[in-house]
Amino acid sequence: MNQEQTKMSTYQRTALGTAMAGLGMQSCSTMLLSYVLTSIIADFAISSTAGGAISTVTNLGMLAGGIIFGTLADKYGRVKIFAITVAIFSLATGATAFASNIAMVYVLRFLVGVGGGGEYGVIMSIVADAFNEKRRGRVTSFVTIAGQIGSIVAAIAAALIIPAFGWRGLFVFGALPIFLAVFIFYKLPESETWKAVKEEKADQKVGIRDLFTEGRSLITIRLTIMAIVQVAGYFGLMNWLPSILQSKAGLSISGSSIWMIATIVGMSLGMLVFGQIMDKIGSKVAYASFLIASAVAVFAYSFANSGMLILVGGAIVGFFANGMNAGYGAIVGNLYPTHIRATANNIIFNIGRAVGGFSSIAIGFFLDNYSLTVAMAFLSILYCISLFTVLTLRVNKPSIEENNA
Image (cartoon, rainbow, N blue to C red):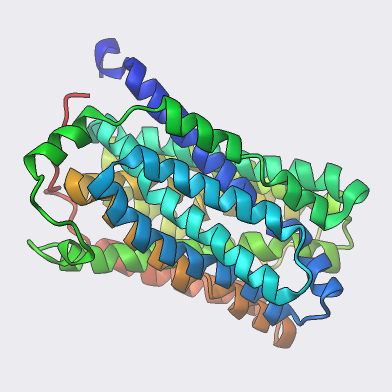
């Protein structure tokens, strides 16, 4: 690929920058829960299973937000919907600081999910609209890496804010993305690609049924299974890892944040590598390779018994298990046309979040009644199921309307 092909236009830079900021801030808001879960469980006197349900409720909200805002973005435009979703999750995160009982936490985290789930498909569609198929793997990897940077910000904020202001102060910090919402609404233009398709298909209704017409049914089902496993691994590990380290390894909140940052750095490197190899060797080989490595790495990690092994092992697990998260926006962008791209991204990945989010409850159950090894074996089996699914996925003839980006 020559320099002319890799050079970004002003719109591409703006679209990519806002998408990265949006996912980064949404990831930060979502991950704040990981660092206060133990405190919330203690303050409201609930079980580990009930604590894990907070994440599950968030993911159910993401499904609702995905259904609502995906079709709205395809119908009315990406930008305004993007701004609205950011405003919802930022305000709900800030309001969580004032929750007086666990029921209020559930409601507000559901709203955080609504905003975050609605945002995901919109930003991935903005990026897919702006870049062609040959560049989507690496470009969407930049967006997902920004999501991990948001997680690092959450870890740093937890280490600095919780000792001084408690878990409620951390959620106040999580309201800051409201300023991004204002910027998006007034400064980000709608893409020419979307406007052209909107004009061409002005009378065509967009809905979930379009994901199951014109030979897309099996593609939609297979991608949804893959998304369920992806989310189950991510939230299962990331929501419980800080609490596991605090209770089983005797680490402080600041200490567990260091371990989490190492894991997130591993994820970011994995995403960068995955985006590159997906564009070069294809999505099927890339996903199959990472899924095999994930199944092995996750199970082996349950035997880590020293600080160094926990640190290095966490980075390796993050590299493989969450590195492939970089490819979902690209593969959906390649397999679905522009006029249903936001709907496809939101429905597929947010069903994955809603169903895969139950892994937090499952892991809480396994930790309460069995062992960490059993919990990790559960995740390894899920990765094997996803491997079988990706091997049956046809990706050779993507149905897309390419722009010249």
